[in-house]
Amino acid sequence: MRNNEANVFVFIASIIIGILIAMNISFTRENKTMFLSSKQYQDAYSYRNELLNDISNLSDEYTKYSNKLHKYENNAKNKKKIIEEINSEIMDNKKIIGYTDLQGPGIKITLQDASMEFVQDPFEYELRLIHNTDMIQVINDLLNAGAEAISINGLRVVSSTGVYCNGAFLRINGIQVCAPFYVNAIGNKDTLKNYMLADENHLKSLMLRNIIVDVEEDDNIKIPAFSGDIENKYIKSENK
Image (cartoon, rainbow, N blue to C red; front, top):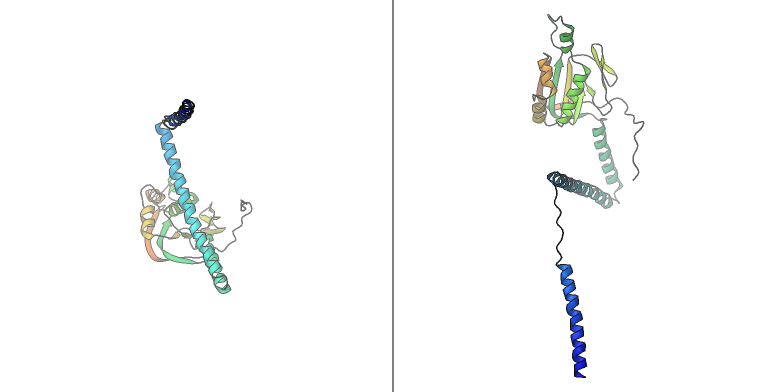
């Protein structure tokens, strides 16, 4: 009887030891190591940073809209407060679109065709004139510098603004204007001025063509509202 008990005990112990050995082999099995090339590592690192940036932006948006929702919920019983919030948001959107007069610090740029005295060569004559491509490049440089609002000879530059050559004139928002051109921009005045006068930007190339360029800072730039209609014929909201 005792021998049978001993055999059963040894049998059970053998099974347990076998299981433990199998588990240990499974747990201690070496993981395969994957080696990346320098390009694969760089791509993976860039993708990781992009995801982290997306997460940060989404978190900021969530906080913004969550706070807005809480404000509406807290003011649910105060219709007047809700209307004020909505009107404030509408006004902010109008500022961005261009439908309100604006003022703030920034810079004033004056552009005047170069002197044509003693100029006989047709190519040089063209170089001494301000063309629509010059004005478009100046606008792009201002936007790259962080300008928040721009006007040319009192005409507001918006997303639909076109600048075309029309003989001695430029046609902006369908209106003909002639030199001198007065370009006003609202933004950080030091940043705008330094950026626009940098060697790699277009004002420098205009100066090399003898175009008269003047840039001055101002603490109270005034830019009028856009007076036309902004029509969007093809874009529409995407339903998600």
